[in-house]
Image 1 (cartoon, rainbow, N blue to C red):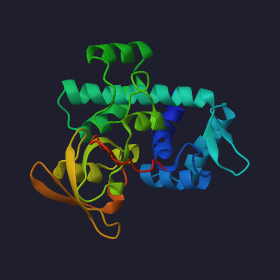
Image 2: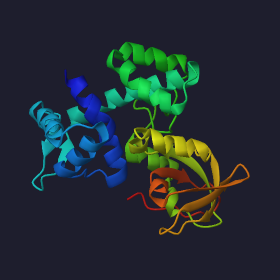
Image 3: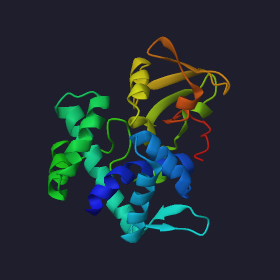
Image 4: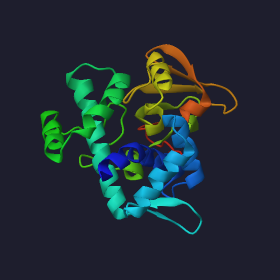
Length: 239
């Protein structure tokens, strides 16, 4: 089924758009990243991408980069909607933490019809985001549009003395349980208020939250999107 083919690919497409822009990235990069993340061969991932192309869900550009067609984007957003609503159900009603909610949502989304997804959304009050802050298609704008509406920028671009509010955790971090645990241990979650102390790229990113001094690797800070609601603030680049 086309839905099953996009279950692996669809979650990552949105993450690639956030990290690399709407241009996407080359097949070799996609294959390497997906192969490593899901512990399958690059050949398996490449075959999945070629099937999507054969089914009309993706196209290859002259520069060998791969982009979703309108049909592919529509189907991808359907898969993402099911996954993120499943996460909210597990997190809000069943008491799972955001790591367990993400892992268990993969199983729930497979058997979820559009009608069930809509019922879950209604039962939860039509939430705008998943527990990690990523927008739920159909309930909120998707991808870059959502980030632009929030005037969001990467935490790594924050300046010492700046106060920021966490908007979302990148899709790619969601699949890394170790990273999510580290963020939980440092009190980073959507709506958390952080006071930037040191943002030197060559060292750990240091901040204060809830009266505690915390630090995370600068590379991880790049995968956290924040906003600054203070008057006169300057937003970082979305690129």
